[in-house]
Length: 98
Ligand SMILES: [Mg+2]
Figure (cartoon, rainbow, N blue to C red):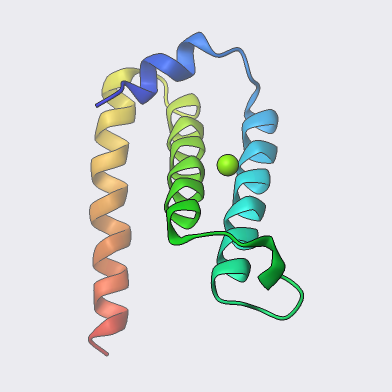
């Protein structure tokens, strides 16, 4: 796997720029999903599920890069990623079992 923390350190983007980039990638993902599901006005764009997968990963990478930039060290990044994934996924799981 690639080292998101290291790539983030080497990329001079600001936190604001990364947040805007995430919004851009979320828009691209929405566009691909609208096209694949043939939402009115979007079917002509002819996206595939492959495009949906690609845009989902683009968004995930930028989101992880934001987490990396908001962390004080690699150890902090790794620990927060683990802690928050467990916390948020268990909240999601609880919601589903209600
Ligand atoms: Mg993209």
